Image 1 (cartoon, rainbow, N blue to C red):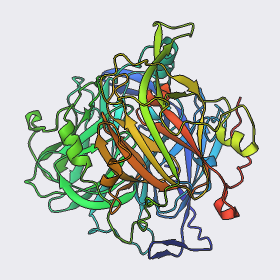
Image 2 (spheres, rainbow, N blue to C red):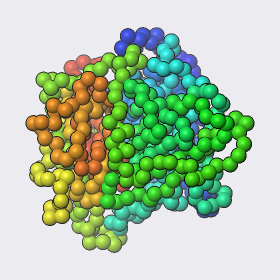
Image 3 (tube, helix red, strand yellow):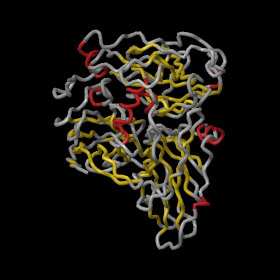
Image 4 (spheres, rainbow, N blue to C red):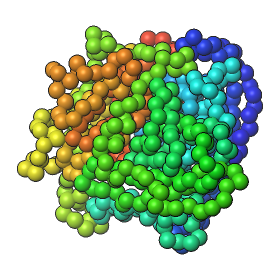
Length: 564
């Protein structure tokens, strides 16, 4: 995988809660990104991948380490890579979203990312952050406990990464490029995958199934990543109980369940105890949606296989919640709570009296006239936050902000919806139009921020996985219907709210998030349904520098990719 562990120890210490980390390592990876052929569903498809594999190579380091990844673009078009969930303190230059913090790495060139870890622990991932290229350019980012640090649970016997993916017979970039040009929504995936394997339900005899070998009476640490393009996922292992121990690289209060619900962008660490009779047990995944635009309802299978087991598998034994089972989704999500252990950062939830910046964002899909030469419809779909459909500039916002270049973005993203209406009611008579713009939310260093994300029934409605770069935030509240700023804050959980980076915003409902703006830079917020982000369900938070060098953006690397 191109890893060279130089085992360099740098001066200084990192304090995490009561834990003193005396050293950290520096790692180097080489990513060669080029086209390769893959045969699935009895069809050969050419994909852009890293080091010839789908999913790509796994990065495996320890908490507090620094990782340099030299990305060589040997493909046919530009792209960037994002280190999903890594906060990158003071270092937005290596965060990765295209035209937000950098310009694309052009074919025939390379760029070295400096990935700076801080308090993250457990499972994260990396992926391309350009158009839809992340569908094939993706891999796991595993952060093990630091030296002399333990897990807050008995050490598992082994671990296994499980990536839940969307499979298309076709080039991911071409799919979204065509959709945006014609105004037609991008097509549905042809299948789903577990670690690149489509399972035994596709009808193609050559398709492979992921198999995980286990031993009786051993405990396994599953590192589950939803890297699908537009689908929230249920996941289960038949006849086995799952114990959830972490989400988004932060430990949570342990709880057991027969299944999990995981949104695109999210990661979950799950323990499973191999305590059943020797045999082969299905692991399975299917999509969840509470939207009128339902994903295809494929069930994708793998095998949890005991050593020396014999006998076949029985598809009738697969038991997952139904595709539209909102009760199963809500029941699972509401059980996620923070846990007070030394391996987690000390709880630091902004209090009511500390909050000095409130942002209330209504998220929606909209329509505007289709005016491209390839339009096949009169109105094309866009998506918005507070009725602003985000337009990506042609030079990156971070460069423009740092160099004080005007005309690239404006600093006037609306902090409230421009019009208040019954967001979750019948909206058939509401004007579905939105305005286009590249508008940012400006924050001062140290601001105590509350963001309320309100789902609406404009368009197809439904849930949204919203991801914020540069931060983990406390998910302090959620509810159904329209947010009421007089009564709903009394229901907030300020005692043990989960510390996450991607939140499930329920259909016809809302969530509330809090964090301190203590990471200067330009940070992207967007829906992790890729079609929604491509349509403009995005915005940017810019955290101004503090008063010291340690609270200011680092200077840019000398070799940042240039915009063409």
